[in-house]
Image (cartoon, rainbow, N blue to C red):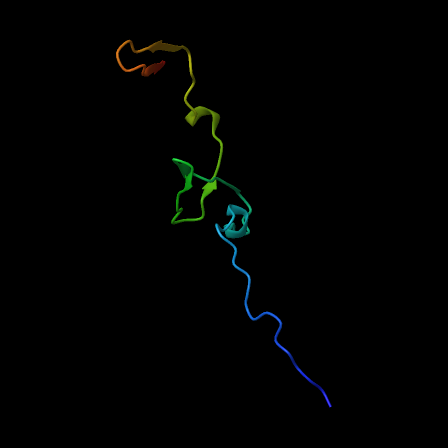
Length: 77
């Protein structure tokens, strides 16, 4: 005769879901976009191809501190 006893009836809750769990197999490099530390949704394959001629170049960076609110102003040329 066999006896059965439920010690704990439940499951596994994973939250938040890590980004590595949501990737798909792809032959091209993919990007992950975050806005305010929240992952953004990509409606396509999220593939990315680096093209040097399409990449902007930074020639000068200048910043100043605001006197009234302590804001930081950043200009990129």
